[in-house]
Amino acid sequence: MPGNRITEIHAKGLRSLADVRLQLDGLTVLIGDNGSGKSSLIEACELLQRAASESFSEDLNKIHGGVGSLLRVGAQYLELGLTIAPDDPRYHRVEYALTLNRSGSVVEERLDALTWDDDEDTEKRVSVLAAHDDDFERSFKFLTDSSDGTYIERKFDPKRTALSSFGEFPPHRFIGDVRAALRGIDVHLPFDTTARWVQRSRGQPSPLRGAATVEPAEALSRFGTNLPNAWSALKNDFSDAHWRETMDYVRLGLGPDVESVNVRADPGGGSIALRLKYAGLDEQIPSFAISDGTLAYLAFVALYRLNTKKSLIAFDEPETHLHPELLQRVLGFFEAMAKERPVLLATHSDRLLDGLSDPARSVVLCELDERRATTLVRPDPDALRDWLTEYRGLGDVRGAGHAASILTRREGE
Image 1 (spheres, rainbow, N blue to C red):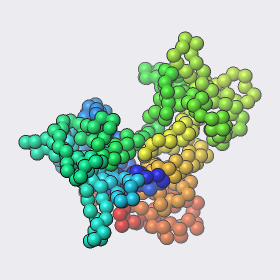
Image 2: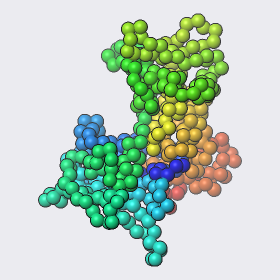
Image 3: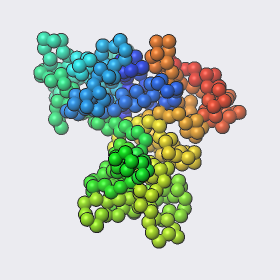
Image 4: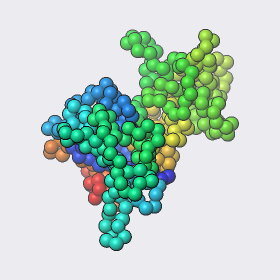
């Protein structure tokens, strides 16, 4: 993986996440009962992504319902953070953490770079950015790349993060690295493939099944809302070889009789719609007539082929709408993407678990302790290896009721 990769996310006081640190390396797959904290970890990724935005406070309240609706019962503060491995040999990790009170104000924010003290063989923490709100003074201090260790101090608005206060030219490389990592987090939920008749009955059209306003597409939007533009970009913004390879992935999942995925412009101008061309059919199939699973698979292909600049890809329940064979193809996309950046999935699918190439490394069980707080447990590699002599995969083992014999290693141990 390249430098500046995200290696850990941290959430404290977020619903069942009393104090959780999840290590990220390649593909991570969250499993567990309903209410065990899987989706809260996905939402923590989204909250971290928003922390780099000037509209953080507004988004926190408008989209996430405010800190009060996120807090664990009895918690007074919500803390979110991440760790990156910097592209700098002098430092082995950079940590960022943000603490919010019930009203959503920033009460503490810090960005630290950690290195080794050669003389004492101990870890040394360098504070690059620190903010505090003690009811008397709201200020933050930071280093610059050219400073001699002297801090610059500024007042700050507690309704936004200090990290988002520097415009497009942050004063220190680690501030820029962390902000880029946060902005590059890409959180997805199941694609909105709702059938046209259901859309009409509830009065909520799905962009996947209709026309979309023509816009540039560097990545696939949440719910696949820009799918026509994504496929237009795949066809027109890349090489012919890239397009042929993209269509090979389509045919691997949907069959060799798929001739092409086309984007047709609205005669009225300003919008485009997706169509699928099969061999032997004169007419192309419009997106409103494509099956849920087929449309979802086309969205996954677009996600895979366009997502080249993301720092973390998170997806909650990717198995939705997919039959087992298509799910295995999609899992292959995620494993390929995980070679370049961490990928985090939350799933209930045993078939997805069966398809993992390295379940001992990938799977994390979320379970609740006696305080209804989430704990993270990973498989014991030796125990899993023994069970896989009798079962086709970890999902098969779990389905047979033997997961407790394998998932025994607490996160961090």
